[in-house]
Length: 250
Image 1: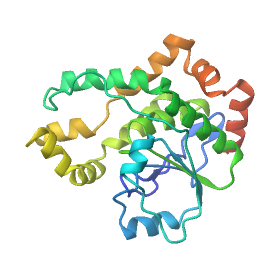
Image 2: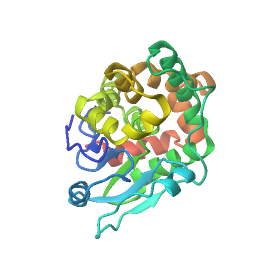
Image 3: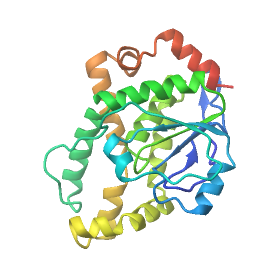
Image 4: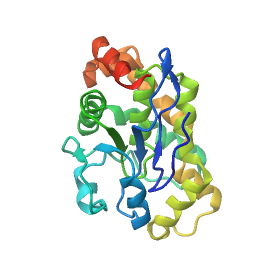
């Protein structure tokens, strides 16, 4: 696995894993949170990497409210399907109640792959990986949930072992990344929840393997397998899956 670089809310390389008889390419596959709070140093770091396509998994309202910062030399193409890509499930829960928080997140993850705008952007994402030159970067808001599912799909479809794709997904819990996410969202957190314990903060902004498993389980429940979901909803036929592997596995 390529450790890559970490900045701009979880900005890193998700390539380098063993996959389909080879290894997932490094230096072309990046993931991130949104860049609304990116510093000039963040943007300089991003500009030094060959990213020709940005896949924006946020919804229309998020893009309008939190426009991304861009380097003066920014020339990448940004792709997305119009619409909203996140929906609240039931009432808010107390971040101190880990059982309730996990149940809520699992319910959200079961819904994410079937939201029309998000599924449409996942489709564009997978097309970009085989059709567009240079590197790509996929991001949502925090870079952990919608992005986590999308990256896990790429890993699954290119033959990355399940244990490795879960390991990559759980890297969103790295302490330095959580510290920065908490710092950036501190005012919003206090306004909505008041003072929270460190454990509650990390639970609120972290991820659990059970969240990703909930998304995969729902895909399998509706379409027989993750691959069945990818073919029926995202248009990834067996032929396109082979093209994806040919483009990304070396």
